[in-house]
Length: 285
Image 1 (tube, rainbow, N blue to C red):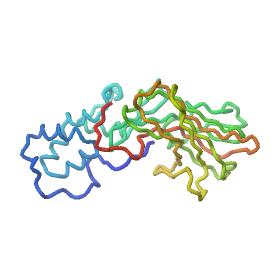
Image 2 (spheres, rainbow, N blue to C red; image 1 turned 135 degrees about the horizontal axis):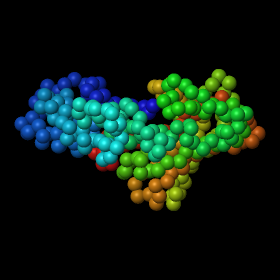
Image 3 (cartoon, rainbow, N blue to C red; image 1 turned 180 degrees about the vertical axis):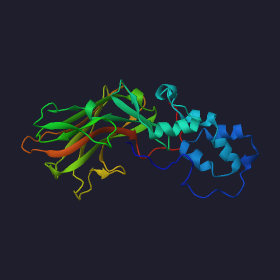
Image 4 (tube, helix red, strand yellow; image 1 turned 120 degrees about the vertical axis):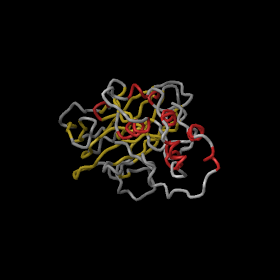
């Protein structure tokens, strides 16, 4: 369900093929492939447009294996058979893999090869979710994560997701998002500040104020509509390197007891590489 940006399996969409010959064309294909491996999947697809020699180099299994996670063999179902490592790479971008005993879904960001994960609603800690007066669960076709949580009516809106940073790519800045939809009867979030907290054990918590109402015109952190029709809002960022603990808690809280809230569908909490990061950094996980 994660959004994909800027790279296709065939390299389309990056401009016309370069007509001027590259001095690197005289190098062996394996050597060119090794050089390209120090870039990124996005760069590799662009470089495939340079010449036939580069196109051959970009097809190399050795190249795409370096873009894959070190444990990729454990992420691929044994029933699947892939013709190349490139095909396998894009399969891991387009299809979600169950991890953490089925509690999370993992996929790769196409442009960088960095890991992304989704914490589905069913595995979030949601206040009062077991009370049918406040929440209920439904199945919807486009949510391949199982059931989603529908907010009927609460005053204490409190959602928390827990995961482990070892499932993510090291040396990478990540952004966490809550992913949801609004129903026609959505109420209680108009111009209402919501607390977002990202807490890693042993680290200073990251806290910010967000809004779940996209209609607010002020320059604040508010939802954006995704290509898949869901809404998402940034909860905060963290850098996955040199942390005191692998445990991470992500919380969204609106505790105004005087204002009842209703009309949201919660898909889950998604963790993806931050929008501003070096695409030419080689994936090292």
